[in-house]
Image (cartoon, rainbow, N blue to C red; front, side):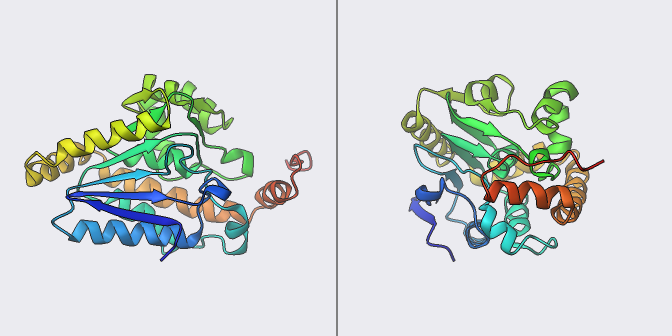
Length: 257
């Protein structure tokens, strides 16, 4: 388990909070494993009716901890990050995300697998995979072109262009953009409480029906992305990009064809 993932129960509501403020909630292998374990436990616990994911009022997550990532990159679908992806993808109960501040990489793509998403207007969402010599992950290469259209998805995935919480809400990635992190978290909690007054099995059945079309196609894409992501991590481009990141310099891709 990780001390950087804080869990709190309030009746049927389980809140999972990424809590590593000195590193902008950058995700380590231990944090991924802890979130996967908590989601699996919540799946089996009938008293848990809804899960709220948050990083607090100031920061969702800056994405992967690059030093941890370089030290032990994911090499297969059994790695901690894919355990978390699988746990969230297969979670049968409602998941709500409250996003403020940075939401980088998987901090954005995981939102595509939540049921309700609330963001602060000035949240900064970004998927800089290509910028790091990598490729899209967690089904984003399938979901975003279908949700946003190819040209807008290309800006986000091929250029790694950042966008705001207000844009996320306008584009249908989030339900609503709120004034600040406190209002965002309060709204997410308010909506989570609504689920506690509804028939739990009816919610689970309804979520399953909503997600059934294309589900196995999406699972296959996630696996294909994951395999290519692992290959790209070992590529010269990714090594140059990640080394440059650690050295706080601009990567030089001029020597690559």
